[in-house]
Amino acid sequence: MSPEQPRRRGCLIVFAAPSGAGKTTIIHQVMERVDGLTFSISSTTRARRDGEVDGVDYDFLTGEEFAAALKTDDFLEHEEVHGQQYGTRISRVRPLLEQGKDVVFDLDVLGALQIKRLFPEALLIYIDVLSTDILRDRLRKRGRETESEIDLRLKRYEMERSKAQQFDVMLINDDLERTVQEVIGLIQRLRNGEKVVSSQGGKP
Image (tube, rainbow, N blue to C red; front, side, top):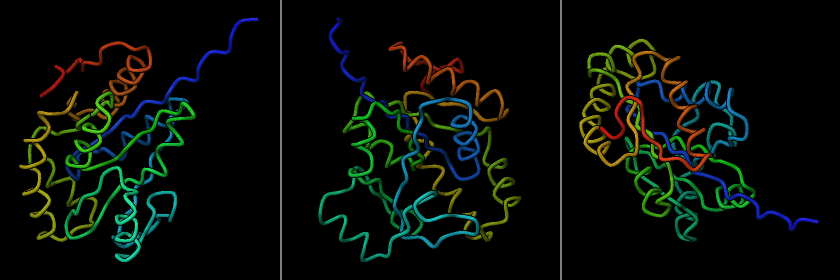
């Protein structure tokens, strides 16, 4: 009888992008098509949007609840974005990795880089667009932000884009299906232990 093989430890796959780049749609489509992916649910103090479900889209916490979790060092990463707190709790992620599950993260660039410092083997994917005009147009069409809020998001984009230099891969999302297929290929290579480089040129 052959000895039992040790359980494969899960991988961390971290996505970041400016608002309006299509990151959420890409993640949803990839997770529908690739088996064995588990989404890491972040905690946030922001208000729940229409259609969002507590414990599915986010863990929606009060400011006091978020502060209490910070005091117990239960956050793998956390960041204040547009006046609201966001974070990833260690108690949610560690059991998934130990079970051999590949965990997908949807984070801002600073949170993604915090993950990379703690887990150098994590795959960081930055989703971008060709211009700020495209971002502004997409944000207007989705109709969730005022013009002043859109201006704030585009101002933040300058910082986000500069941090993208530290990601493993940058993908320009000008064709959704092509970008989804590119991400699927990256995950397959990661699971095979291959060096992960984007066909769009690797790091920006």
